Amino acid sequence: MNVVVGVVLTIITLFFQAYIMHELTEFTYKEYWTKTVLPSIYTTIVTFVPMLGLRIIIGDNVYMVLCFAVGSVIWAIAVVFLLGMNNRERDGVISFVRNKIVKNK
Image (cartoon, rainbow, N blue to C red; front, side):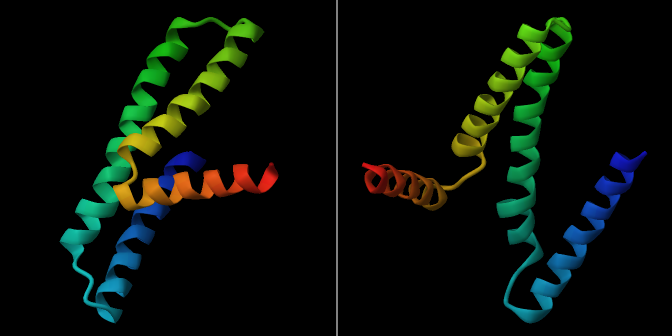
């Protein structure tokens, strides 16, 4: 039940944020939905559905659950990076990681 309440509140918050942005800037609702909400929904589905299917297939063996957890994190990062980000965001992440690697050497 808590999850349902959380989802409903998140949806209400999305609409409220969109309204405020529209009132304060030249922001359009269409742009918000096409550039923010729809990519987020698509990325969530592409991340969640394969993981749900895999979770149903694997058992409750501790080793398998651990592998599933690690695989889920890797899958989620890959999907967000490839599908959930635009080129500018991807370039920013790559630059940030490169700077961290160079700084630590």
